Length: 414
Image (tube, rainbow, N blue to C red; front, side):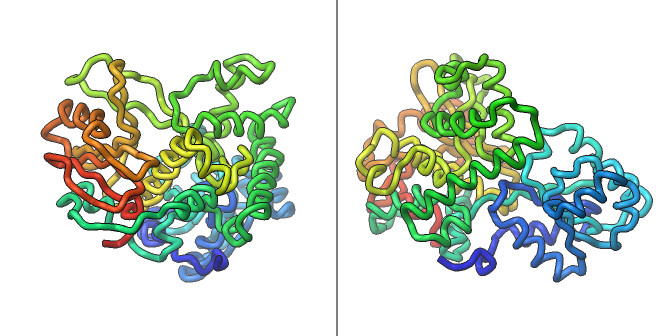
């Protein structure tokens, strides 16, 4: 694989756009997803001086005298891994209020500030947020995808596609972290993911919370990986550990803060009753999940019970990544009612609604659209499309705004 500096990141225009009209812009996402590479490139183009809080001297200076540190900064600068120096947020606020020019501070963070209200509130109205994910499949191919445009546009044309077969499993196991993809598939890539989780726990998690037994965190993340794409059940996650449910719940939130886990909220409407209101749990990247579960492409291909949920998480990850540079603000949910109608992923965009069901098989039947038809019935005027993604060859219509679509079209550009 190529070095991560060679990948074109499709969110870059959003970052440049935010710098043009916002005093402070934060590019946030998990460690090692490519934030530093991107902000160094953009910052160099726009005249920003680079500082990293992973540098012990820089971190000490900012911690000892936040106001003095910020006051001495150049007019335009990059501050990398800003979550390590939260005390500077107040000083940044005062500096921006003193001179409110766009693009002054370009920050990166490996913690989700939306889950740390004190940090987000200190720069309310002054801070633009841009999310960077691990690499999307379309970025690996360097092709702008058209899936979302078809989903909320004119639908999907009926045309054949070549099945992915074993390649689909390999993509799920590989994940999207540039440094992992630079390694040979198999043992060396798995080692990178395991070392990544261990390093993250020892650095960022330790900085954020006082946890007496840090060794619980990787084990909890592995347990979450085995429950990915299922309804969040804290009791099930807590059962292997001698810890209370509230403690495990706090640890799940902590793992969300460093982008290793995600809760997908339930979709609801007043037009449908008996809806399940529990969020779904997803791990942030399937490469991390497979490494923690000890799965390579061969073992995952033979374990269909694990492959189905991991494929659902993989699809959600690809859609999330594409949404980060989409023109509309896309909101993600899942749908389920107590009669077992369900849709894996529900996307809302500008008042419109689309549903996506993910199948690991090569065939689709009318029964696979049961949940999508229920979703369509609940919001007929808002419903844009319902899609069953599967590893088949035919892209075909299954009725009014309902389509079976080969999964590879998720990241293709036609």
